[in-house]
Length: 478
Image (cartoon, rainbow, N blue to C red):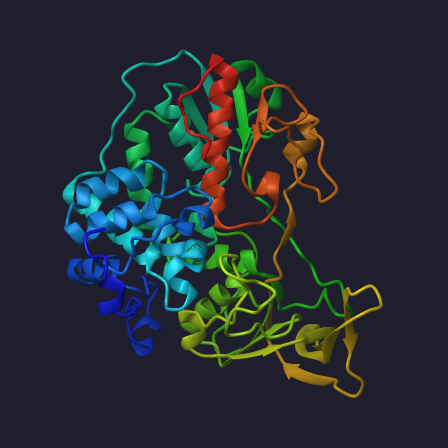
């Protein structure tokens, strides 16, 4: 490594966010890019460790120590070449990935880990600025045609890899614009859409054909799809939200998180949206669900001018330090305060919502109770209500952000594809479904997961599709 004692000289320095007062007024990215000098300093903390477990922690096998060293040495172009070898969307994972690799960083055993995610973003943005990222269409075509259904991170990564192999790739997207969850589910204050458009334009220049506002099974038949293409990959994600079927669920003012986020993203993009407007201005907002989607809803509600925001979670508050049950280098579930949490709102844990209370047909309050998790005779955790702990929370707007259970079944049923016990698409070891030449990847296959897993799944599916079409492949497995 360029500086084998860098980690002894410098401490971890997080990215600097814009002030809360400033960023709450707009939907621009909350975290501006840091300077090249700061990136070089932080990259120097990457140790010359014997076994870099960050490789093990990263689902796409990023060459993390290698490009960190190149950042420190100022060789940004070579750093990008290594980053580009494993990641089709580094400028997006560099903004959105929870950096599971950092929890596997050897330095993290007794110190703060390297700022891997921020360093990755620095390389990606430097590559765009200096022109290292540019259209590079394949020199030879295979005369094989592949359809990718869904244009989220899995679909984009899969299409990119298959196009690199020389196949003619068409990506179908039922929404008006390309990007899937990246465009419609992620708020602009985390990912401004010009970042996404920049990448999509390069993919178009490289020869990928995008068909937006086109729903497979409706606007184009599955029979036509199977007839016209040599292989098909389904990357539609896991879009069926987990519901809360309790008394009062049908009251006005209760919405799913993704519906709320999609509408606001469309509003910013000046797109038309279906359904009644969902606006938090002047309202008591309750977000049920303590994950990142819930956090995104808090940031959105703050920008809309909510009167008060409360986020509740049924599970206990996570620990602030790694618990003994989850030793290094595993990824622990820890207490996390996001930029959205910093912008305002209250949080509470181990809360069970029992009932929605109405006023003239609208939600007005939540009846809740506190719970505890105890182990039964078999050692399994069991949730129990705490007697006498019931209380109410005022709410004019309730956002359900409790995750997703499985993919939508319309296209799956039309194709006659089998699903597993969880409702996800069943595949063999080569990512092929129970219907010949129909593959799947991403959340449709593995269930709701992280963006970096979506990229990994797309790359792996492309590997097996190329192998299926050509009998051999030079595409990597991840």
